Each structure stands twice: as C-alpha cells, then as structure tokens.
Image (cartoon, rainbow, N blue to C red; front, side, top):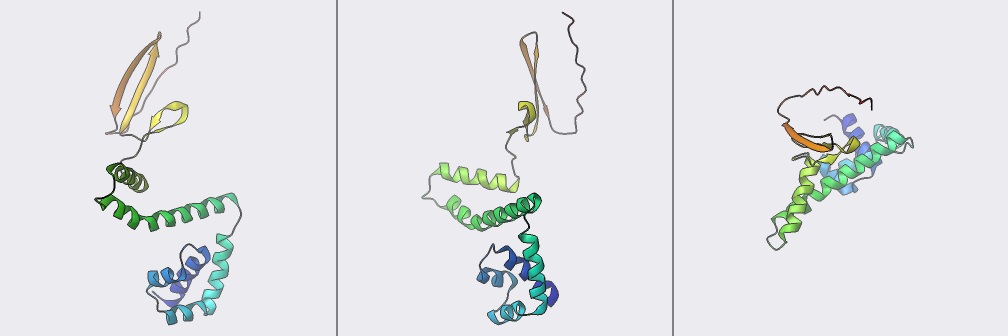
Length: 159
C-alpha cells in the first residue's frame, strides 16, 4: 500500500473516531513512529480535513450513514465477547441461544420473519396465503424455490 493510500485510510479512521488510536495503529500494522510520521504528513492533514467534512455532515443521508457505520463497528467489536458467551459452559442455554439468534440476524443467516405492509409476513423461506371467502379462511403456502408471480382479479358484488 503506498503512503498516500495509507494516509487516506488512517485519516478516515481518525475522522470517524470509532476506534482508539492504538487500535488504528494495529489495524494498519503501524509502529508509533510510523503513525506519528503519517499524521504529521501534508497528505494526511489534507485527507483528514476532507474526511471530517464528510463525516460531520448534517444532512439526513450523512447522519444515517454515520449511525450505520458506528453501529457496524460496535457490532463487529462485540463479536469476540459474543463468541466467548456462546462457548462458555457456565452460561445458561437461553443466553447462548439469544446470542446465536442475534449473531445470525447480524450475518443475515436464517432470516427472521417480519410483518411487512398490510400485515403480510415477509423474510421467510416462502409465502403464506390467507384468503377469506364468505367468512371462511382458506390458507396455503408456497415454498420460495423459484420466483412466483401472483395474478389476481378483484370481483365486487353488486348487492
């Protein structure tokens, strides 16, 4: 990695202020002397100003991205502790299961079903249909093995 790219990456980390300096140094494999040399360089100072302007922007999209980045960092830093909890034989199984469910959600494994628009279940491994005809409920499921197009027609009674 050339010095300009390294200075830019370090500037981004410093501007975001998500990790302590020692962690930034370790992340980039820098000695204290190397780190000091980088942060005193003109390219670093220029990139730091740019990164601070981007990171501290106050528009809605910037705020959302900042929150997303901070949350992602927090989650990533908690993974070793979650790993220890899951493998600790002295912890109750309920806590381990919750930690595994959380880790699965964070990784996107085993998506959890959620209520979507109009109370329709989404995010599972298929689709469930509940149709009410004359006050009677008719239900069926379709596995999500292939894309499915649902066509229908609304028929109004002229009563």
